[in-house]
Length: 223
Image (cartoon, rainbow, N blue to C red):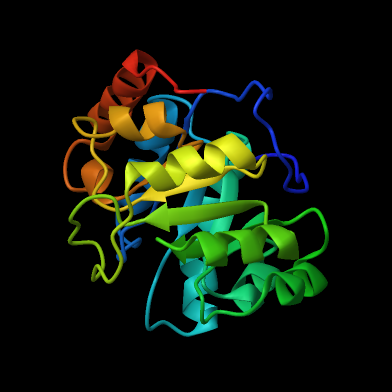
């Protein structure tokens, strides 16, 4: 997704335009590889997160293989949700850690220094700074809007993105109920990546990706 940088003040740093970070639905079998290909071919995507639940590692690895190949062919980072061991097993580009899924240090030890390691920080400035100090490649804030993808226990505001953007170089990801219709303020507030799932997979995935890019291009960044 991005080169790893240590966190530091960056008021003068020119930031890259916001990018899309796709998160898989829980069901990635059947025709999903074809859907993923359509989405990735509809516009630039920085990363794809493989998020499945309640599957053993053998089955998860089997389902991941065609999706990982599609991402590799398009230079899209393939990130495994929650599981450092699965990420290592399949040679993923990185892992996304919830607060209960292990530490950045453990991920680095298992996956190597070049792996992309992201951390869910909910609505917490403290957790985000801790992740930055630990060497995370990005921090994820949310949920910003109501979502049915997963239960919402934390709600984040635009001020969190503005604060992070003003002080830190490590990219931040906005997540939670994001659609082409509501994403512009997140981009303007400083989200480096928009993590999206339902807004893409609950309809025409190619049309959704194109709509996101149109909305992101029209947003005016605050920095």
